[in-house]
Image (cartoon, rainbow, N blue to C red; front, side, top):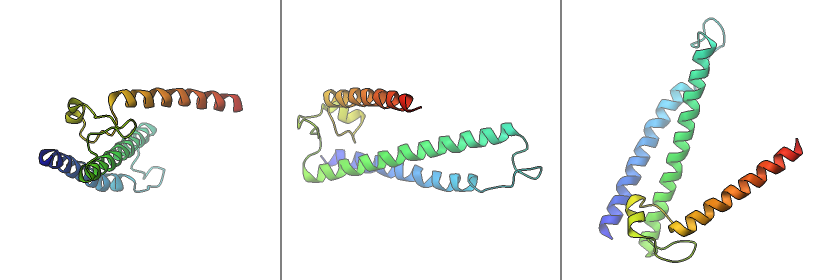
Length: 133
C-alpha cells in the first residue's frame, strides 16, 4: 500500500505542478487588447489562432483539475481502506487497471455501463434540443 500511496502522491504533485504552470501562462494570454491597428492581433487569423490556443489551455486546465480531484479522492479512499474497490458495485478493481490509472474509482464493467448510459442520455438531450428549435 505504501508504493500505491507514493505513486498517487507523485502523480498528484505532477498534476498540481502542471496546473500551476498553466495558470501563469494562461493569465498572460488573457490580457485584453484593443482591436485595431495597434492590436497584438494584426489580422483575423492571428486572433483565431490565439483564441484556439486559449480554448485548448482552458480545456487542458479543466482536465488537470479533474485529475487532481480524482487523485485526491483516491488518496482518501486509500486512507479509509476502500482503495481498489469499485464505488458502484463494491467489487475489486483489477490490479492492471489500477496500475494503468491509479486514480480510477470503478471497475471496467461499471465504467462501461456509465459511459453507455452517458451516451444514451447525451443522444436524448440532443434530440430534445433539436425539437425545441
